[in-house]
Image (cartoon, rainbow, N blue to C red; front, side, top):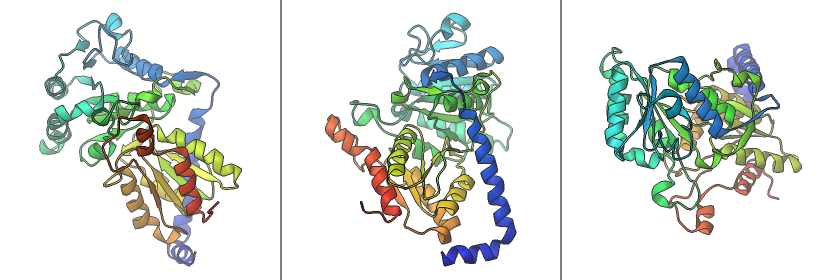
Length: 366
């Protein structure tokens, strides 16, 4: 606490003013989620692509089974019938091939939306994603834009083994030139995918297979065809004063459930949905930690060099004197994903893990 007082003495009114403005912006952002209607994440993604294809003839979709089969997860349902085979391309099973074609089309001014059946398969195309898409704008001194979206399910599903369960958020978020987004709700999915398609730079769009069928409340504003969420801005899903929980994608739901359990024990948890992994909204994270003085980070990916590690580093660098407890980092187990259901559960963060970590941060052992 002495560190906080010293920091306040140094920063003076400027820091207080900055925090007030940040908090005001965050509270305003919460209004997006108000509304009685509901929509599944699958329908949110489908409608976002549909509306952007309707608005811009340069937008097209390509990938395995996106056309006649209407997508392995039905995200592209109805698009072939509506826009025809010239804008909805079924490709052979060759990620390296169709990703390269997509990057070339983006060079030429088109706006491809490339679907990977799972981001595990994007490893076949990683040279095009990183060495071509991510670096071309810099290497051309800004003369070449690469407006392309790489989208598909990322991370663990259920019982699909080590080669179909990996989270690639930290992999792609480490690359300059890429933007990396990870939606949680239907509102996230619609607003962020629209932003990704409209963006002049390559965007890696990490969905979660287990969220596709989940329904979420969605506002009239989010249903408007002009709706778009800002890239690089996190959302406070639940306000609190005792501990900050920062996470993304499916783990946001787990964090919200953990916050409910913590509330029953008198602990007020603030839950931050990152939405954007790169760029990372460090201002929102640090403003929250400076309020609560405690941090718990959660991700499904491997612990070493993960997204959580970057968040913890940011807080230690920018808000260390505000911390009243060591940061708590929850991640997937440091092993390839087991196939057996009981072992798979042990390899992934669970609600009770988040509860225990938050209680440790608050020095509550029971």
